[in-house]
Image 1 (cartoon, rainbow, N blue to C red):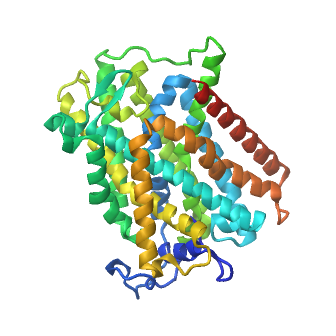
Image 2 (cartoon, helix red, strand yellow):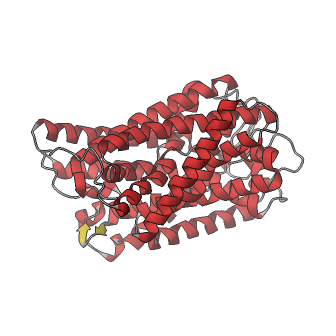
Image 3 (cartoon, rainbow, N blue to C red):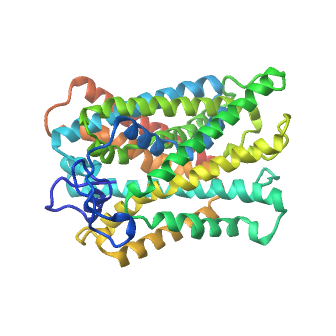
Length: 454
């Protein structure tokens, strides 16, 4: 998501982003005709808690569902360590991004890239955000389809919630469920022109994610206390070169799990005290790391080698506890509802950056209802079709994580640092930047190669 600092030469997406994510002391109003955009009430800046909430909501999405499967690939001990290391590396990349944005006077990620690499850099950043966000939202739809209508893996069918309640029917098949969700939930929520209009749905989405984590941990602890859980696989099963290459397939999933860089600048711009951005980022990463570690540990503990790429699909059988069916449904429904409510926030950034790519010289998107409607409908259609044809979330994470996500999260902040147009880079910064680029490129290249060979 990109925002301008001046009127000259800015993309339409950047102008729209300023209106939707209001800088402090800027009037609300203008740019749109729907009733949620009223004007006249001042915005005096976001609080520390509100900023942590918004950034954490950006981070915790569908990636959490694929993390238990990475434990199956990496083993529990290395997997949990890598989750922490990914958070540390993300913190370092955001710190570099914010520092160089301040030096350049850039109010957006796109402006920071433009300052370092010109119009090409800004456009490439927008393209990567588009690819990443489309991939993320395709994953959301795949999970919703898996959980509500069921999925098959290795010849075994895992029943969906609605399929289990009413039996298999045409109206609760995957295509029908995603059609109903798209028109009944996504389209209405995607019609809002301001992120602020989604603040209440965001609050509910975080609460639902916490419900999922608490129930999953509670079930695992209960079964562990009763001796119903065998010893988990602590380390990976490495016995030949293909098994070594397979370890790298977890890298794109870890990259995707922590990506939030495209929303750092909008949150930073809205703060009452901009110096709080550093502790806000660290608090958010600490909170999300705790959620990820808890889910990865207890999710893999519950299902072991039977853990699916989308762990929610595992919650369709008898868990060996009282009221198993109730808890199965509670876990799956809570997280599906969470994803439905996170979807419009990610979609908002997608629409702005796509508009900047396609219509760089047009008037702000909020002022053109026809362009807004056509772009919204077209993007929803692309995501809907992709979700019906991509087989599972692991494939989607492999693509977005190994391409756009790794650029947005690590390569671009490191490249800005190495470019160092303002002469503020320390030797340690440049060494860190080189390390991030080499690690990101090598790990993800091997992941793509391994995934293609398998």
